[in-house]
Amino acid sequence: GIQVEQSPPDLILQEGANSTLRCNFSDSVNNLQWFHQNPWGQLINLFYIPSGTKQNGRLSATTVATERYSLLYISSSQTTDSGVYFCAVEPTGTASKLTFGTGTRLQVTL
Amino acid sequence: SQTIHQWPATLVQPVGSPLSLECTVEGTSNPNLYWYRQAAGRGLQLLFYSVGIGQISSEVPQNLSASRPQDRQFILSSKKLLLSDSGFYLCAWSRGQVGAPQHFGDGTRLSIL
Image 1 (cartoon, rainbow over the protein chains, first blue to last red):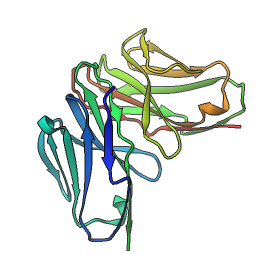
Image 2: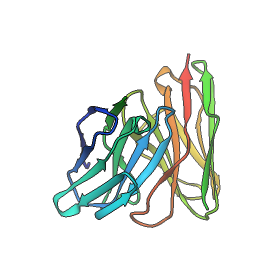
Image 3: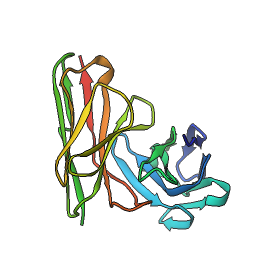
Image 4: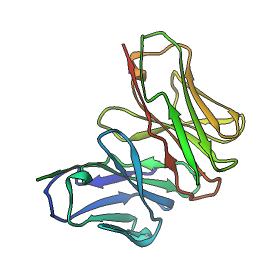
């Protein structure tokens, strides 16, 4: 099956810093989503981005499908950004089934 | 707009007891429905998905089963829970289109004693 690797696995930032999270995947995909899992376990949809670039406030994401990677940018980080960030992909030909990466655990400190 | 409800939020059950977790979706028809499990400190694993009433596909062999008695209702069950069934269970829905984004419920935290 498809392999989804996220880096770095852990990240500690001071409030106000910027960061880039990366997601590499091993095969072509129909769908790629970025999620934020907050400390209460809720999975929040950040981006639906099978290709191209999107921005939402301090967050933006870019997927280069031909090179099989996606990047999530967090600018001016805040303590509320803490949690785990997951990349999930729907491989071509798998009928809407998402495969999740292992996540990046982000801690933003004051 | 569409919403997804999942309950209970937390559950503590003894080994060998039965399980029933329920998920319902509002505001859409004929959605794809999914059950995922997340073990502590790990990513999500797809357990079951359904493209219609009575149509269930299992992704991994396990002690659990799923049913879809109504279009927007998805139930996760077990006849006898094992310690290894502990975890965080999330329900999700998507439109029935290739590449459609999935939307998740708030999850059920299940502890087996």
